[in-house]
Amino acid sequence: MAIVMHNKSTRENNVSTHLKRMGTKTAAVVAAAGAMLAFSAAPSLGQQQFVTIGTGGVTGVYYPAGGSICRLVNQGRSEHGIRCSAESTGGSVFNLNTIREGELDMGVVQSDVQYNSLHGIEQFADAGPYEDLRAMFSLHPEPFTVVARADAGITNFEDLLGKRVNLGNPGSGQRNTMELLMAEYGWTADDFALAAELPSREQAQALCDNRFDAFVFTVGHPSGSISEPIATCDAVLVNVTGDIIDRLVEDNPYYFHATIPAGMYNNSEDVHTFGVGATVVSSTNTSDEVVYQVVRAVFENFDEFTALHPAFGVLERETMVTTGNSAPLHDGAVRYYEEAGLM
Image (cartoon, rainbow, N blue to C red):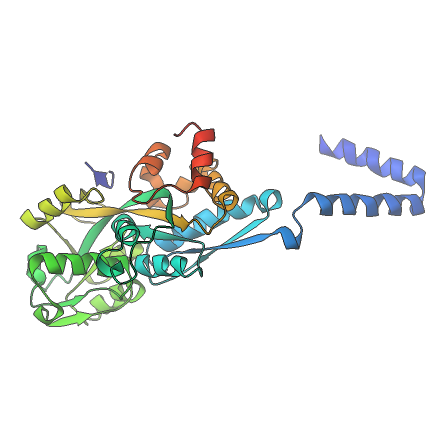
């Protein structure tokens, strides 16, 4: 993946002349009839449907991803009557739990968290398998990214041990991935000099304020949350490599090796890590028609969509359908993909 993943005026004049010949009263009747026709052609207020997409912190890519999807859906509102809004949330785990509770219609989530929710494992063990979970499409790659203060002496992931580290807020994808890595390395929160839980929107400034030595973030690139501390306080990117990482990638289909290219953030060399994919999910409780129209809005306006954020520049229609979707595809999505020849 790269990042790297191995004749109008004439008509109006005619109408105006015709109305003058008809007289004022007749013209008023015609105008009223035209207004009624226009009203009946558009979906009435009662026919409108409101859908909400859960995203993540405003400094990450999930929030603009949800906003971009809703922008394209709302452009066609007069046709299908769907009004879409994107909501900033705590991230992947929060989105999946809230969809399950019926309080969100859709959400942007990490591919590994999607898998865990479907099967009722890891952080979803108590809730059990979410059999009604459905995938819509995948989005951009999300390398697990470690950003450290230049004076912290951190060059690889293992160097975080004993340091002040922001693990991310509970319910976020970055926290989920960090806790998985901690378990693999045999670490607990007590193994850090400080285990902070700031949300992604606060971590860049806190790093520059010397409130901790490093933070982790599972995010699409380029990201303002990464470029800000690099530009402001000379923060550095850290490699996440080693035997444990290699085994995680080999054993889990939703992980992959990733490279943040040299020069993306003024980094002189490639930064090697691993990552997941961002995905858009819903549930069987969301109607086939709504999901069909949301998917259609994105794929029928694909060039516009990919231009809405730099992280979307690597997207391809086919891979959005075939990769990263751990849950079964929603029937509404399948309907569109079959019509478009993508399945």
